[in-house]
Image (cartoon, rainbow, N blue to C red; front, top):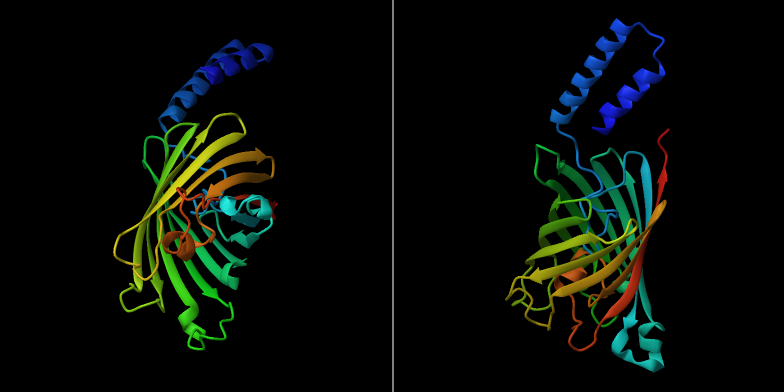
Length: 294
């Protein structure tokens, strides 16, 4: 209705044209407006960042866009006042992600946890559309290699330090304020702690974003590790809560999580912190995009 009203006002303002031509033009514009309403449109802005908290979202940098991502986690809150409730300690990850096309992106990163390097590729298989595809679907592939030195474990070298993670990201934007995502994942470890531990580990992640002001949102994610896969150490499921603040060219996320690691193999199957015991890491994610497209 707003488009039709604008067309009528424009016709009145530019009434120097012939009346017959004006009527024909107006009728044509009304028909075009009605036909446009029947077309399917791509749904954008399902999430405002490429990370929900730890889990990647279906979003990726646009073509010829470079994203610089900082993921920072302080120590555990239950470390007490002596450690300033975890603020004296920290772990961090730096990442660079580049949009090769509007559907395909690639990135690299470096984490202080285990001094791990990572590389990833994300591809948008499907995009949600009005009156068409009900969900968006992206494939996320991650390879991780840690370089932490263990002088007492010389066998931990080369390919034994490498793991591979595949995640299928399924998301739907239900309204301007609510988006949800489901992400089944598979991780392969070249080396595990004991023969009882599985080299291939399966997990499923669920999370979402609820917008409560024009530029602020609540986010949450839960990563469920299927049982009897990692048995040599006590592992907890990762639960994370956050607040997103959109500030123009970047998104700032305040984070509370029981996972110290910020890439797939760590938050999916190496989370040793418990919310019940106060093993909560406060931190933040901040991303900044640079557009190289004319």
